Length: 338
Image (cartoon, rainbow, N blue to C red; front, side, top):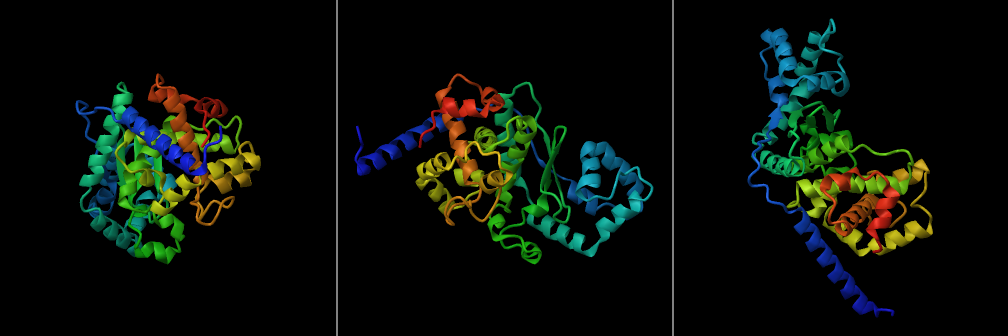
């Protein structure tokens, strides 16, 4: 029976609200008895405020305190080589004493004079992690300043966070560097817990690239966002997705049209790298859709598919949802049909 258009809209809204309620109930678990305290460690302060007369001792202390993180920071983030190299101390001194680097550090340190709210959200997030993974250990979260070289990285059980990537929408440095406007909305402190959880999920559940296509990418990214859902169930959806209010409204209002377009244009199973980039990567908008659409709109849709899959398989644990690597089977079982 065909549903009249006005009734159909009401019907869809009701289903959407009911599904959202079920989703929240499933992930809103009681973590009050889980004892863990995760703080944003300030390696940036330790580095920029060390006594230059004791640099050699400090380097040894950094190795002891930060381990593999220190290696990655030196070699891959600020790219001055390993601390064991002959000229390392002089290279590190130049990095620390560079006037622009010190200015960026001072700006960052002032903005992050207190990390109480971030610490609270990280702690709450990893309480949820230990609820779902009781035999695991919460990672260390270590902040650094790299003159905008690197946003986040994971190594072992550590998540490194480039604090100079979260200086706010109106930060003068982003303007000076010509950072695209569409990227600025996520360069805010509130995004740090979301990005930490997303990065940690990516480390725990790597992409199965045996068949790389649009569908696989969008559902894998959807799984990562579902992990963020489980870790930070109280966060608003737009903040988790990285979309502003208008972009969230566009996705919700055009979910059916996006899906129809993908199916009709045979984009879902496209292995063309250009198609994948246009649908999955950050951009001013998703080029297959209108200019009002957000970039990465297909990732948001992949998230809805994973949510539907989890909703239709209530006996699966979070780990089982996250470990599914047959992306086409996830779509089939989700019965996704916006």
